[in-house]
Length: 302
Image (cartoon, rainbow, N blue to C red; front, side, top):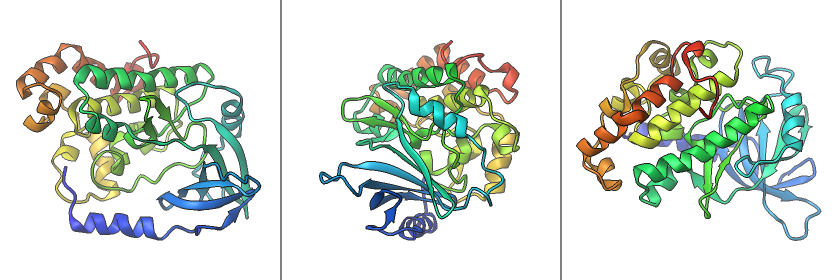
């Protein structure tokens, strides 16, 4: 799904204009480098001001005061749970506070790359991709046993470190990531949002199962779910993106617009990949992505 120069320019503008600046203090932390920036939040590499070693941490900072953002869920209980549980595939929360009425969260700094980029860089085959994805599934299942819902799982917040360990970020935080975005993978987060989120309905563990299904779809096809996302050649408005998820029926992964080059990167012909996908993975992805939550799997790990 190619990006045009307009999209790239917009993304550059977003990245170059964060609300904070390097060297600025936020609570007990000093900002080092902006990693990502959107309308609702920004993420910085930072360190404690009293840490002589300047060990890196990740700060996620709200751009909108919580008191003014009535659409943001109140998840103080989720933060408390996240702060006391531990799982090798969940990025731990170290601190949560606010500065001038805007919430910020301090998390472990992960030296890693997004799930799909890792798959490409390592030339992972289909089985290895699924095994990597299952680390994310295990983390979600663990979180669900503690009644923690992520709500925004997508390829860009599933990271993989140098040891091949998956790390899920943004669990239990009250700052949703902007849905606006274009391009491949994590730059089109609407493609991975559950229908109930787009309708403004309460999110449940079933919402995470939908998101897992949509991420699995991309992991095994190299494409976002839904035909219109697969064929877009220019940026789509947010309303158009929402309409796609709420109204279109996704092709089975084996029937998507698989490319010969993608199949070859996994050591398969396109026909071989289609056959492998139709032997179970089609059914798994589509069942997880059912529009009706009651038709999805009951648990993340079935």
